[in-house]
Image 1 (cartoon, rainbow, N blue to C red):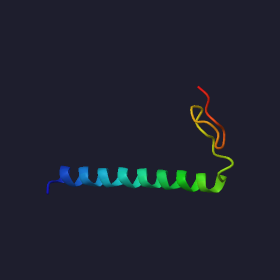
Image 2: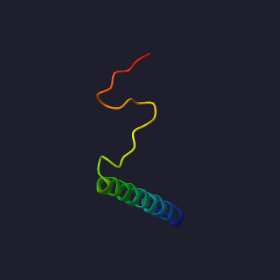
Image 3: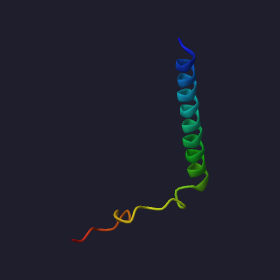
Length: 53
């Protein structure tokens, strides 16, 4: 392997590591908030309500 290939591989692995850490932190923060703090999307009805069109 050439030096360029090694550097490219190291860069790809580093970016994958950063991406994994960011996703893990985001998931951990959502778990700490609890379901009552998570917002529901505006286009979805509240659970238990009938949809009228």
